[in-house]
Length: 116
Image (cartoon, rainbow, N blue to C red; front, side, top):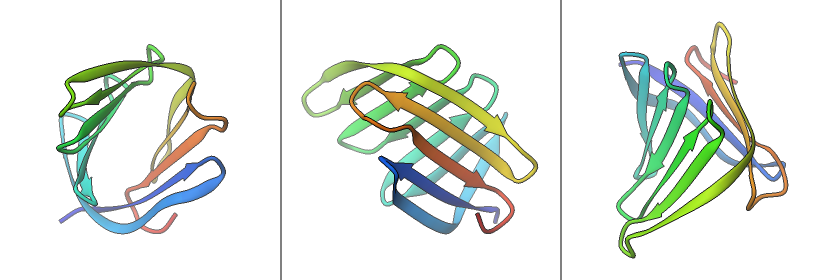
């Protein structure tokens, strides 16, 4: 099974640091689960989704839009994206984004070959 390493930096703090997370890829969509949260990165459409039974967070990197949907409350919140970019390299992907509810750029690193 293919695995990836993931690191999420929020407000200059490492909030997630996971190694050897199983993932699958189909039509350039990478899917993996961490702590009961499903994550989907669609390379072609430049979108990222995190969701569980309680909420979903959708980031449209290309169009600089995002949504937070609270499922139990059936409430959709549009969140302004100040900055978003998807970077690719030989080892994987990096998503940098800043949304209006945060002060610092979030950085998500996905390494498909081993350690970050």
